[in-house]
Length: 149
View 1 (cartoon, helix red, strand yellow):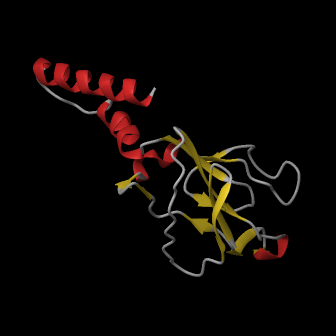
View 2 (tube, rainbow, N blue to C red; view 1 turned 135 degrees about the vertical axis):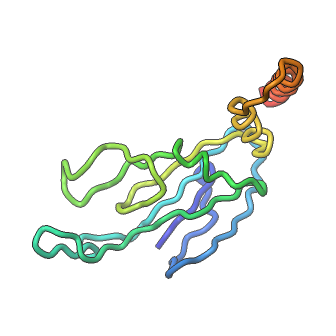
View 3 (tube, helix red, strand yellow; view 1 turned 30 degrees about the vertical axis):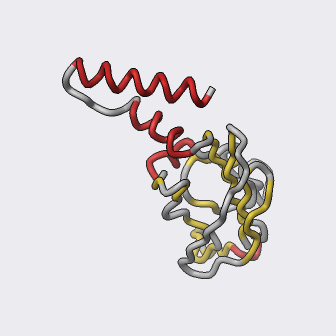
């Protein structure tokens, strides 16, 4: 069972079986957004351990996320999960990655409009050779940041 929320508004709450595509529409025009994905029904019986080795486990792997038609896979490293473990001290307090093995929301923060937000991220990492192109790029990035502020 997986719940997908944006800004604490539940947009999907259903079972995921095998590989599945989930499409949700966000009508919230607030500037800041938090996308959260959580596996909500995992219990201790969902992990099978034999001879100190996990032989079977229920987990959720995030293969792709498109926001406003932008593939944001390269930004997933910014998302974090605070797992709710089965036992105290079972693992780290925060996990960064694209797989959920425990309850607890996986969260990714982004700005609105998403295309401009992710363009700003990408633009700051682009390698543009000529000083003239860098000046033009920096001018437009500054303008986008003003619009978003």
